[in-house]
Structures are given as structure tokens and as C-alpha cells.
Amino acid sequence: MNAKRNFLLILFLFSQNIFGENLFFNSPEPKNRLAVALQGQEQESLEAKKDVVTGILQAEKTIGTSVSLFAALPYTRLNESGEKKREHLNQQQIGLKLFFSLYDFGIIGGSNYSFATGKERLEIGSEKFGNIEFYGGLFYKSRAWAIFSVARWNSQLTPHLRERDGEQFEKTWYFDFWLSYTYHSLESILEVTRKVQYDPQLENLYSTIVAPGFLVHLEMMTFGISAPITVSRSYVPDGTLAHPETTFQRNDFDRSILLKAFKYF
Image 1 (cartoon, rainbow, N blue to C red):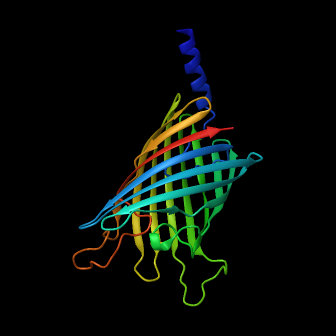
Image 2 (cartoon, helix red, strand yellow):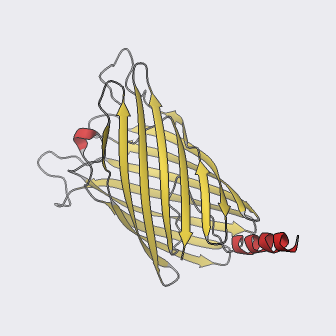
């Protein structure tokens, strides 16, 4: 009985130092950690179905208490109705995180770049365009509750750093919201993102994703599961009977399941 109480006390004390991890989003807090994630996505239309499975390895190293560098290495397998299975490296990512705290509040900022290591022919990332992203937001924590909101701006990019020869970069705004409640070693979270994509060939595309999930914080590791769902969008996946030429939008999905494990050092 004493051993059990001691174990629960360790979990409780450890959880007090946890900022609150993220599952569908990248955690904005600088921290020395390794993470591995497995995400399955599914999308259906009138006549087609698409399944995407992505494995991701992430590593992060702090520089002081407010800055960190991180990298993400995703590998994707895609299966679509009437097509052969495809798999390839997705776009590898490096980034910088900034986090400045004042009492219960925090200022979040950072940037990341996704390299052109995909393959457009396979519909997995791109070998022509990288992506650069900048973001900023605010964080607040009060006892067991924590919340943050972030705005992200993402744009395609080439080594020339500008559009040329008729190129038009795809640009996207993301508006993220995250809410967390922690009880001892258990943490329940809700992540919501609103995506506004400017497509130079089409009208702007809108979608909203809601991702409920929970995590278990152990002494040196954290395990989590999340279920992202697209609850609204301004277009019909794979088109309609009136517009059958429309295809699935890149990175779009109806429902998903995400498993993630973190190791701190």
C-alpha cells in the first residue's frame, strides 16, 4: 500500500511540472524531448476513399529556458480507391520555438521550414516547393487548467524565395486553440484549428478541425491519443456530381486517429 501511495505521489509531483503536451498541434513550449507519432487519416466521397498513414519522429533541444530547436521526420503511406498504394518520405521539417513566461501568462512564437522532400506524383508532399511558417500567440495557465491560442501563417517557398515564371505560392492561415485540464497524471485536451487556404487557381478554401484527446504523464514519458475530426469545410471532397473533376485536397481528411509518445531528457 505504501509503495502504491509513493508511486501515485511521484506521478502527481511530476505532472505539476508538465506544461501540457499537444497531440494534433506541435507543443509550443521549449523542452528537451523525443517523440514518435503514428497518425491514420481517412476520407470518403461519393465514389472514392483515401487512407493515409504517417509515422513521425520528432526531436527537440533547448537553448536556455526560452528557446529550442526541433526537427520532424515524417514518412507517409497512401492508399486511394482505384490507385496503387504509394509511400514516400514526406516533407522533413526543422524549426525554432520561443516561449517567454510572466507569472501565469506566456508569449508564444516561432518559425519552421518544411523541405521539398516529398513527391507530388505520389501526392505525398512536394519535391518542388518547401513551406515556411511563422506563428505567434498567448498562453495562460491557472492550476489544473491551461489554454493557448496561436495564429500561424504558412506559404510555399522555393530556393529563389519569390514567385517567378508564373508561379503562385499556396498560402494558408491557421488559427489554433488549445484547452487542457490536468488531474494528477491524467490530462484531457481539446484542440481546434480553423484553416483558411488561399488557392490562386480556386476560391479560398476553409475547414475546421476538432481534436479531443487525453494524455498519461509517467515519470519520464508521456503517452497520448487524439481523434481529430473535420467538422466543417467550404468544399466537397472529391467533387460533386456537377463537378466530378474536383479531387481530394492535400492534407484534408474526414476523421483521424493519432497516437503519440514523448520521452524527456
